[in-house]
Image (cartoon, rainbow, N blue to C red; front, top):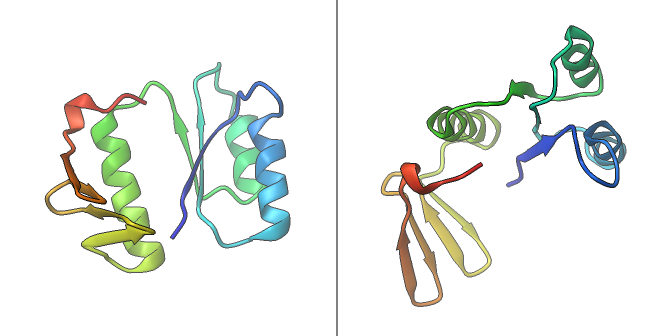
Length: 113
């Protein structure tokens, strides 16, 4: 399960260049473009033309991003209460992250994006 949150303004390449490289290999992975620079209509249209799933303007609220990503996961992959990758698990209902023998309670007000 993959969702890519991609900023347009990267140091080495633009987000559009990265998205183009990804789209050459995978047309289905959801890509959400994020940008904080002066927004032009042409930027969002270019993103959609290149295959972006959505375009989000900064600043944004963390709660909105969490809700959006949760909804996108449900629509793309089907709802999953527990997401497992390797030895890590994220419980979407309780916001508990489990890895090895550690349990971390995640809180929205501590996330920084």
